[in-house]
Image (cartoon, rainbow over all chains, first blue to last red; front, side):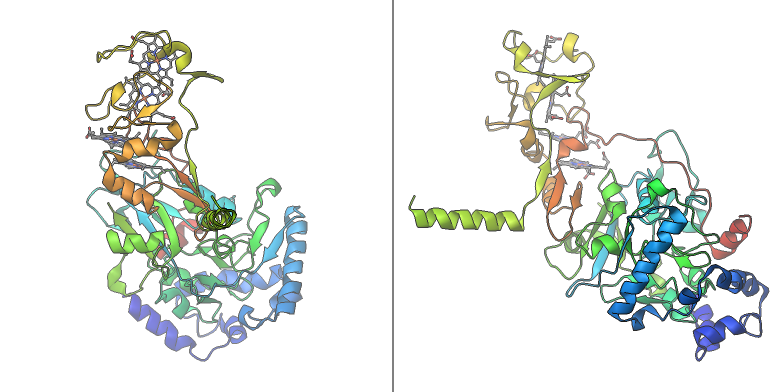
Length: 314
Length: 171
């Protein structure tokens, strides 16, 4: 089912450039009603952007000097929009010999949502809608049907008898359907395995959101609201800088932290130690030990997405 | 020691520090916490008579119950020096080395902990780490991890795209 959708999209947009796409959006390409609805944000997106932003080149073509200028512009914008003057936008690059992977121990997770909250804070996500790139699912023991899971569970204490908990976030798939369906190449996989979004290039069509079998992409319906005192000033250009309205965001394994050697924020927040992260190419890494010594599995393996996010029980 | 050997030893130890400058987060000392102040165990136990009998404790340790296999106090505490923990071979360790106490019976978990897979490490995935000791997550007297109140549920739902579009349309 998923493949069909991909193929259709692939064909439809083979030779369409980003600007053609934006122009053609209300015409023949947006043939179905559902698609039309998904497009609306893309159409009024232009209003929110300055000339510079709108005509900014694709991230991958930017020179160092251009990036520096853009970072300054973003820092300035954070100051005007959020009243914070210590924003520091950086663009740490993938490290040589590093491919990230994540593993989550489902026998230890108790479903406290600590990761979900920490993610939202670290990544300057919209507080009004309670945006987070992590979602914790509550499932019946013995079941693995995500469609039957609960996201709104709220008992006095967790874990509950007969339940287990499965946090979900971007799996940074090696064979990522979201990347394939993007009509304008605003999302791609970096050398260290992290799938990123160029928020200035994204047109908000939400194909990637629909294509993701893990429900890991989020659309910003509004300009994110974040109280000044909660802004995280350590910002990555491709990760947690405040997103404009009308673009898609996702987990980036906190690349502004992890490419500087730190653990991701969700891992730091987890009280149970269920979350493990590191360099899969390093034979001494925690993550390698898990792959070798635990029975790991990936979600929806049959789709051949080849996630870099593993689950295990022990 | 000759100066040269000393020098090498110093270099080696700084190198080692550089490579594995990990900190184990534990409790420095055994103390009885009474609100904001801490009492040395021996401040009372110099005078309190030893009692090997398994019983319901009264007074200072009234609230303390042990539910951990078949163990009782002196499986882990030294009966004479109450400031110390005791290993099965009789040697004494401080609270900061309580991992050694646990490791005696939980070898498999200890191996995973050494590998950074059981328990929790924070800091740097490729550098300095803070490693939580067992007793930071497990009460040695009541070892199961304690249940906790979850953070509030999210306001929106993600799932199959149809639902997501539908729900979000209300915003």
